[in-house]
Length: 351
Image (tube, rainbow, N blue to C red; front, side, top):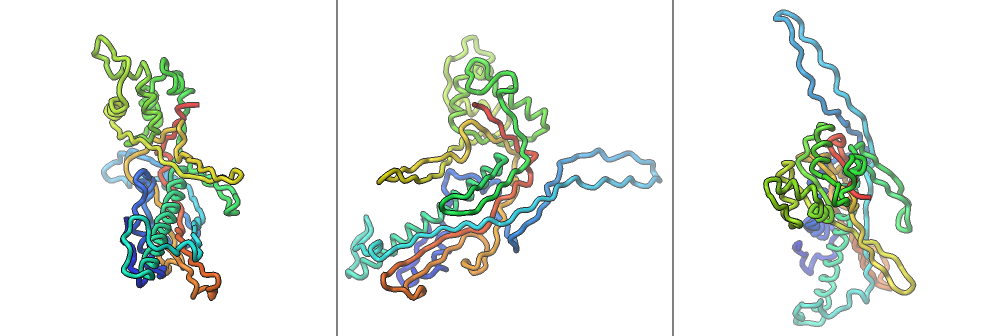
């Protein structure tokens, strides 16, 4: 957990910006590994997508002029920074608690109430920060999948789409069928064929845990695991299946089941739905290293610094103390750009 501010300065937006910057990214999020932050000075960014080439240098006579290499093949791409902000407004009754759960009471009623209010505001700072992290992870994973589509809803009128040109394959069109076919599916052959045909140097496969479980049920996969055995086991563990895939292909297999939540009002109740970042029927194959960058622009609320920021509105600032309220917000101005799209392979492995 981040270091929470003391009771003297807890209304300061600068203090809360420090808290949200230090708040750890949820442990099951991986997008920042592929899209490290890069500061930019504007809201409209242009970058180059360079085609991967390795031409052979020509032979020349000893006194001949050297041939001139052709220019790089590149595509210009641009985007505008996406503005992400979320806030929580606390009214007086929200923070009039004697103490937070698990805390010892202070030596005065006023001190206890203030400390309890601080604890609640601090908890909301982390919740809001996690919301920004979830949105960034959603953008990064969907960029790897080759399609970021944002449509208007009751919270925002913003609409945009990004379609990085990632490579795609469908396991059902490879002859052996989807990986849900326990009899015919052959994922080792599928992946080896695609990597070779597309000339890919894959270092990591990101896949839902369900697809690793499916590997344990495939007859051909188990046969590959025990080629020297006279009696092939009828079952293998998930760990064995994952280790064999890593050893056979020389890659790292990363199980990935991160989710975000959405709310829906159903009558008088609220339903919370968990949604997958990576669809359960797809895997993502990526090379080593960063695949692009998360460009982040300065924000006035953060003192014109880049990265995550926070702001507050208290009764004195608003000029409204009747009724009392306190507002805390967290934001981030940035967007991921996939610059090595042609080295990423997305495979649909199930219907």
